[in-house]
Image (cartoon, rainbow, N blue to C red):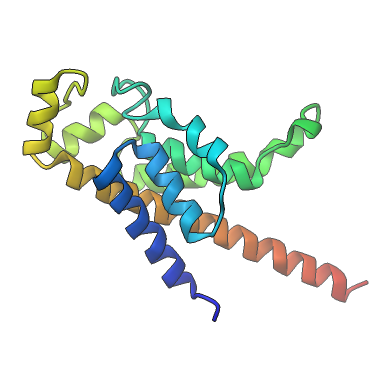
Length: 179
């Protein structure tokens, strides 16, 4: 039985959130949520996201790792391939869809910068390299808040992917019917 869009989006949210709660690394958990919801297996993309956690390398000085993970999932499916590298226009679809994710993210959270998001969610930025800071972050509920954010971004990215796949299928169907 084929799943409904709501069931797929719910799976993306729950999977991303649960992975973040259990394992951490927001970009990887977002990718896991998207890929599990869409039945995609690609450990290379998952692995490549490792260093993007907490605004790049746990620094907070960059955009949210969940946003990075969602962007990587979109780019994996719609991005330019190496064989098309000289063709500038082949990258447009991934960039348009990634901008859509970015815009939805900023609309929901007011920013895409990790430090600012932590401040908004838990009152201040925590240096996760410092064990005392990490412990303090856990005490104020950072994992719960960030895991919900990860789930939300996994859901957003999955919806963008599904809608684009639908558009492509419709376009292909219209092309066949007019031929």
